[in-house]
Length: 146
Image: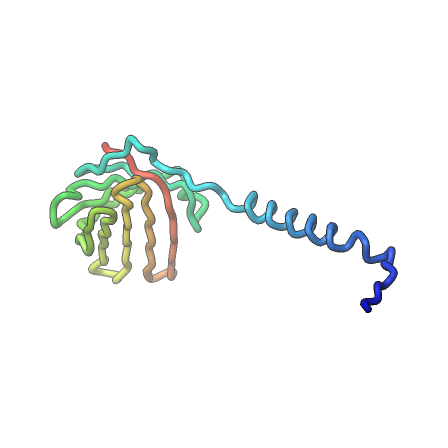
C-alpha cells in the first residue's frame, strides 16, 4: 500500500519557476551571441578581393579594409589600409579555404589571413614585436570581389 504525502504549498511553484528560469537563461544566451554576417550567396572567389573588418580586438580597426590580389598565384599580395604593401605566401588551399601569410623580415611579425572561399568570410591574425611594443590582433569580416 503506497502512502501519499500531503503536498507542501512551498514546493508547488518550484518546478515551473525553475523551468521559466532555465528558459530565460537560454534566451539570454542566444540573444547575447551575435549572428554572423555572411557575404551572401552571390559571393564568388576571385583573384582580387577587398576585405572589410567587422569585428576586431583592436576596435579602431573595425571598418578598415585589406585589399588582396594575386590570390590565384603562388605569391599573393596584401595592401592594408595604412598603405603597407606586403607579399604573402600561400600556405594552404582547398575547395573551401585559402590561407595566406607574411612574415616580416626585419621584425619577424606575422600576419595570417584565412578566407572561406565559399562564403567570403575571412579571419585575420597578426602578432609581432616592434622596438617599442609587442602587439597582437584578431579580426573577422567579409570579402567581396574587387
